[in-house]
Image 1 (tube, rainbow, N blue to C red):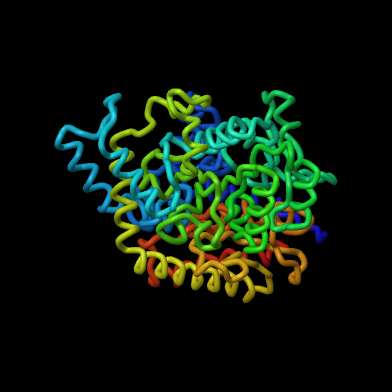
Image 2 (tube, rainbow, N blue to C red):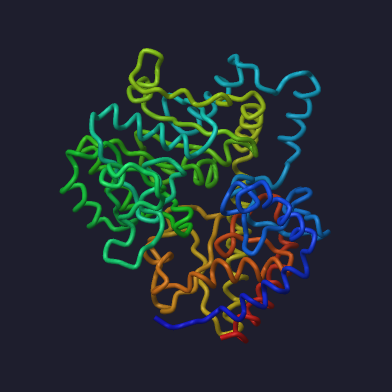
Length: 463
């Protein structure tokens, strides 16, 4: 492992950032009087403090210090059309003006209309709504455990399935032999850590070994076919096909967590592009149209355990099936379904050009950066990207064991340094880059080139 000390550069960036964002600093200090760390989601709480946002439209956000910032975070990758697109805001505005949209406690026709779109576009048989991806994955695991009568859950090391009990094991990389086989929070029952089996993404041999060892005990295998927090890594076709075959062989429920991937690559689920159908799929982000909405969809015989007479208490929460969220969802899913041939080629092609621009900007300064793209060629393209700095240029990052391992990649550079340095250039990224929306345009490429170029020169000078 090459030693890189970014301490001095981070100190310089932090000082410059505080000078350039004084209003955000003041408001952050004020927020810390009542909010833990000044906010309510760790990824938004950029160190030393986050920019405080006043507005967001299209590809840009505006902050309290008067900056117009090109944004690639785009609502945690949810805003595939950009911030506050008219197709959603106009529908919501009309509903509110007509006295509709807030919580009623009754069932609106919007639920079945939106569910019909999801079933038609994904091939799933039944849908139930809730309010967050974390709840969706929790309910999916409950359904699998109840259906099989088994306890163990298998997941991917470095895969994020939300802040729910089985999802809080195997997230962070640990410098030990079992890199991810740990609980990542205090407060969980000891049994949870024992129930979760962690396997390696895109490693078919390890997957086969784990099924051979634990198969009769596994209620489900939950994985993202496109790993998000672990590095925006697409699955190999062979890996997903092996997962499908082995799960059927052992009577294990296969759950695709498509909170990120669903309706991001085409107007449906990613499993369809691989020709692999899961038993259950969890959806959120894009399907909400910028509103809080999530869903579990899947086989009828499994989903019916959530019936009133069933054994799984899938209540969803007070705001499940919220009228405004469903209206936003129906509007978004209808738009994506009707404009599929225009939306997805556009964002995929632009994302490829952005990745090329970023890599060339670092290469010009003698720094090797790698943006992960469309995997083994199964996908038509990829509009979500992260940036990695492998110490060995020949190393291919195929799993979170690579991307989150500080002995393989310069993790601090890809995350803390790059994010802070780019904010000083009026560009906001997470994990080094982020997601492309239809609101981004070719006209953004010169700014991206200049911003990454200046940052690359600062990094090079500090090494």
